[in-house]
Length: 350
Length: 106
Image (cartoon, rainbow over all chains, first blue to last red; front, side, top):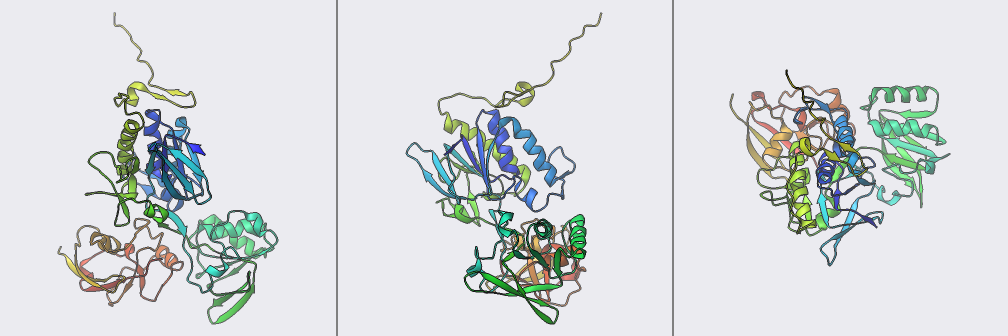
């Protein structure tokens, strides 16, 4: 059982910044995210896009913002459960919560802050008959363990970075890699496209474009796919089919936690502390809603800050505390590190 | 600059006749959101998610499709010949009377 003070669901910019604000109050945080890396949408969808409305940053790449946040919260040593989706929540007699992920990892905390953005990212599944039937029997949407594909025949579909990157990676592992895309052009990074082109010439990647998969064949396990290219139909024997058409966010299991939901977002009390209808559960950032809500990173930062103050009062109801300025008190990391302003040099004029 | 009239058919087939400002730099994805129609716009309008796919039912001259939009649609589902990404179409006076339909959710 992982124990922490504030359990944050969602490791996007809002969730990450909450770690910093909690750290100033000496509260420890642990984050759960369905994606394998922190950063949420910023890291997953648009790491190379500039953001222009982060106060004090005239321009910052989304990926750099995440890196900077990770650096900023490092002294507060957050824990991470990545690649797992928060599935269930149980309220304990003492008012604390146990949150369990889809892989069974349990987390215990007196305060839960949902910073889930638009939801957990789920793979977008192509519209193919029998697709469900072959899930985990040859069809996979996420590559968890590349060794599964060693010396096997693999068909990948898609035109973005993940389709290109996995085709390149599996070219060294699988017996045969076929990449199928509806266009001859690819959206992914230029060097990945060039690498695929090179591997195609070497005969290590079988590239079929412009084409798409039209049906799946097999018995208990996938045995082949039918591909339509212009006017021809191709049948290809394969052990695995991996459609990589990106991810789409779904509110998912959090929607069944008894929280008040409005327009696919969690209603919170914005006049006070962004608490939900369940005391001890807060919702911050894009996942919440209240009159006048704006889904902006900078608003998420503000919400995270107020949430932490309220969480502190909930965890330590009898302690008096007054908000401190980092310019005055510096930062005391949980790792023993200390950052503080340099002492002024006093010089007299004679 | 004046507002223009646009007809938007939602996923239940209901037609919404809306007024769209031409002077706010808005696109069709944002217009749908402004009227609380169920368009996700996950990526915020960067042609990177296809969650604002629409079908265009009138023959208005639309901004030419960029390579980004074209390739994103190549990976989207329920794509038809009249599919566009709403976020890539800016609202201008030339679009008066435009009729669009929101594509199914994926």
